[in-house]
Length: 217
Ligand code: DX5
Ligand code: ZN
Image (tube, rainbow, N blue to C red):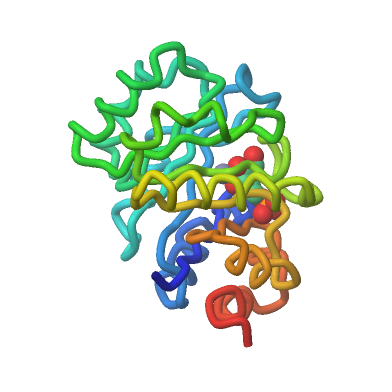
């Protein structure tokens, strides 16, 4: 499949969020990445359900919601109702991950599982058949604008092999420090979805940057 681009609104202008969502609508982006932080799983607080509901009203593209919250089971149906199409939970924040992933699917969303940089992909062996996407965190979650952790390439390759070996169709998403200098290498290593925050919204021409992340030219 052709890879997808999911600009992260964490780096958008919160005073003009509508303007940035419309920019993503006009661009070659495929999804819109929304980072939800609870100040507990990660040392930061971003935005929550009412903001997702407002984004949904004007977004033309699926909302790719990344929950960096403890015990996400409490909120799965509310994120569905708010408009999430893809809902990703952190492996480290779930006690009964199979139940969580099954519930996300039952609600009609694509189910994603995110791994922190220290979590081995081998831990996914028994859950992989039940997920639509694995998000490899390529920075420690909580903040935009951090440097990409190069060890992530090994995790991407290892995960690609696990998926191929199992005959599964699971997408691989990367998030953190993705920009126009590493995007192509990531896709060549097996990535299907590129998330980019600062690389897009801090660039002089965000639409052109999205185009570059999509077309590599
Ligand atoms: C980090 C978030 C990311 C963040 C990426 O915890 O999950 O989605 O927005 O930001 P950049 O692309 O600036 O590293
Ligand atoms: Zn994210």
